[in-house]
Length: 335
Image (cartoon, rainbow, N blue to C red; front, side, top):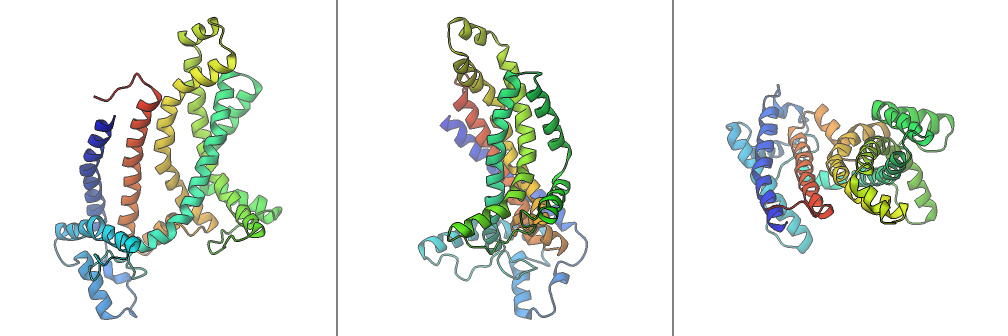
């Protein structure tokens, strides 16, 4: 298992390099002057520093190489300096946002906690709701609960976040006045009253994202459970006198989770993609809103960095899914 994980980690490096190269070249084809969006109030020395950081005016391969050096060599040094108080990155050029004229990674790290709070909590809530629904729907196939769950999950599949978000705002914010329609990212939790305010403003964006997660994972869970409930080992376990709870919740559930784990692991990058829309609907000051803002502002360094982060998430959680396969199923061996 360790050898497999190391081999996959090594293979992921050229994969990510290829993805970053494709992203960079596609953005190079974007029309217009990259520096045209920079305000006239920016001092000439700042503009020159921005040009030097990205190698503007030089061949595309030189610009790509400068971006690689800054992302994979200089930015880790900045992180080490922040942690240990060293000065490895002092005076070195970093990727500069054309929109804010500050280092891209600094802005991303400022926005990341907001996204992780909303996305992470929504995914956990979605999984905790989806797994019991899928298990019970399979065990009580064609029951009223199963048919109701199928109907609700189909709605969750069909309705996109840009529709459910405004719909929840109209119902729960405008009509009922239960929850705020705008997520206040400056809110600080320091007592029980402020915690309740934080919980209220998180409910709607979390539930919008959790709806799609619940719809997808519950259907996979149900299908996998149904496939295993009809296997010979289940009849053998029942014939040996094992209780129904042990048969379903231990033997069947363990085997059924193998394909579901892949869906859960690979769904994490997808939920970040859904957060792009949700964050803009509820004004969550996260990386999703940051990406949309950067696209409208033609901030290519920010767009490339964020899209590359999404690519890293996809490759990383592919590896996590493969490793969890072997953990859940002892029959799977990686030689």
